[in-house]
Image 1: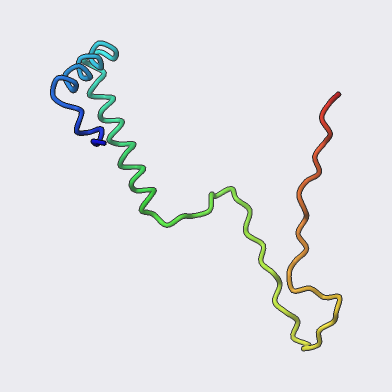
Image 2: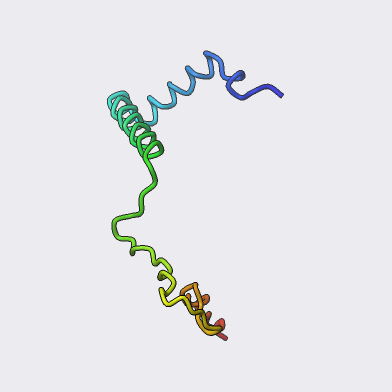
Length: 93
């Protein structure tokens, strides 16, 4: 099976460009190309950046450090209590 880009040749590219001119108009094509280039640059910059939490995200909750007393009881837990999944309402009748 041959790759798709091998099947796209000059007449097909000419038809695509002609259809784009008919659909969008000659004066709007440079604006569209410019905005697509800007969007690609912004996407590439965001991909190469380290992932960060959104500014409105709540801070992550970490487990408290173990007590310094050294004694461990059977009822203490090292993991914080986390709520289970939210209960779901039964479907309406």
